[in-house]
Image (cartoon, rainbow, N blue to C red; front, side, top):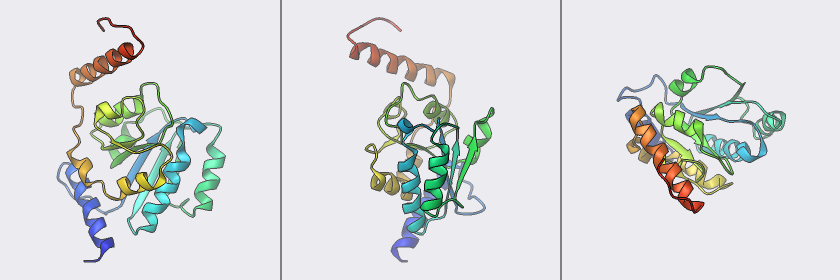
Length: 196
């Protein structure tokens, strides 16, 4: 087995576990980002990492749900990187459940987040998360990559086997407890201490 086959096997194994033990019809991995298409979301890093994943021989798709002032620039970058056939820009969508259900891994390359509602939605959907250390990503057990580090994101995307062990938030109570903990940390960081 050559190196490319080993990496592909790891990817398939990671996804099989996340998909309730059922092998998908193909070995194409679907990455998902739900975000406003603005500079602070740093989607360029995700697109460049997607190219590296494709160049490594792994079959991947990347769905970007959202709209914003950067959309045309990002579509042009996808074309320039020759990955426009792998990337789908859906624009804003009212119902996101279907997108989370069809995805294998959630990807967030944001430079900053307040809380990160899309991260929480991805966790509720049971998706492994690859993210920068923003919002509630660390508390959700995401694989954390340095901001703008294309290599780190590409490596995490090529080898999501460790992600299979990431706990998914499965109850409203678990979500509320994580939210309470995150809010308490934020208040303590601001020098305030009170019950949440």
